Image (cartoon, one colour):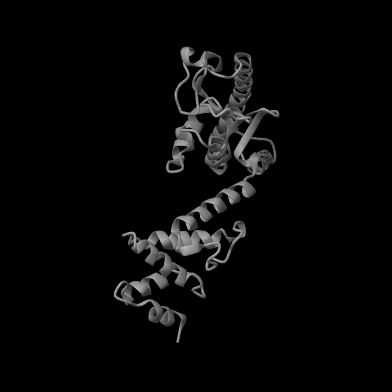
Length: 290
């Protein structure tokens, strides 16, 4: 008798029909169906609470299996670690494993630029949505929304965005501050500051901020200097991009024929040398990932 048939025989009853059992067992995509019985058990425990959703269990089982390297208690059938088919506890295990995976696989240089760091303070520019999630955790900023990652990209594309983080938390809305400099404006024209609750800081509220005002001005200045340098780099990259589209992709055979038509002569091997130099530059730009 197959494992599937054994499970059907064991769990078929007036509470759970055979077609449902088959669907639950098939929800285990592992070759040996090692989670099939646990899927049934979790379904029954949730069924007693009036919850009939199956796809959520399937998805969570897949997550659990993928996260096994980050889970200490890997035996899902161990009743000491997974008692009473408690689904909420199972979800907690997954959440903890996701947090451990995030911490262990996060490469800071890929997701953020560090502008300043000491024992008390961290000033970063998030480069990716993942970086924004990490450094903007426990805030209400829209740039740290897990459901809408494109919001971060929209802000990143149109602003220079920085997170100022106090390492020694005081459990206030000022433990994390976001500083926003619109790219289209003069960087010396001012900055928009948000507290962790996503409230825009105005003069009256900022006077009650528990940061030292001198420090705030110092970090704002660091951001402005960075913005100035980054804007120069961004403009250079824009020029390179325009050059690539206008020059590197041009049809030089067509140009050569046009020169011949109007009888403009070039030095020997001029055209071949030009193409070679352009190709060398093109290869270098590709190598530098511009």
